[in-house]
Image 1 (spheres, rainbow, N blue to C red):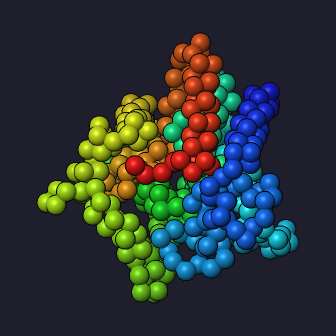
Image 2 (cartoon, rainbow, N blue to C red):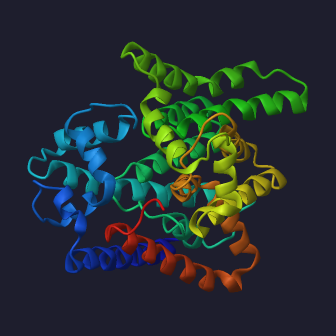
Length: 361
């Protein structure tokens, strides 16, 4: 296990170094977006639209993004006394800490599950960190913190700490709205057991509902500010409909068609990868993971997603990596090939991201 994690760390550092060297020597068009920050190593993290989070770090002036990530960065600055370049440096520190939690947490989660025990731990962790279509995991963005929190929630659930797991899932809602689906999955899992066993597990159901307090509290706060979560993101939805959806066409149907076959392959493949993971979790009897993914996908029926960042959505739904881990276990000879393809494609996505060539079509 130690050797595997050391190997993972080495690959991570090499990948990180090459990507950031490309940015420094290639001349980043986004340089003007991050001023007045001077060129320091941590500055590289604030390229791309991490400038949105930089704005929230300085002043939370809107709630389209939950405030958990910028507030955590502020807390880090207070604890470590970070002054100059505070956003970039605190983002770098939080990114490293989050990746450490992800590596250890996911390894522990796999090793304590009889269904995945026996696989080389470094392989699925690497697949998780270098998700093939992901292009923001190493930026000053909330993905790594969110994934660390959700993994912690799953680890607590595996130890039968249902209440604590649900509470951490609720906390993740304040980092990314996707956490709402994990909170609902905790409740749905216990309802599933009640129906399956024809017995009302009221205590476990009550514990699994702890995360709903965070969801309710967040929406109550927004209501007190005279807004709602949907109202905050509605301009993006309106722009999507106006630019891409033909008059009279259902925007929900347009998004579904785009993701299922009509969009860029970098959006279509992650969409079907998530579908495959839902089927996998159902077959392998992993109810919490199943409901987490299934509720997220079902939400497409009531919410109009911008489909272009779909690969980023799927990248933090780590049950996809569990499916990959199981495949690695069953077909170990293909591990090296699979990992090589993943890393190379991940590197290409990083270059596109920090070269300002990633984005919507």
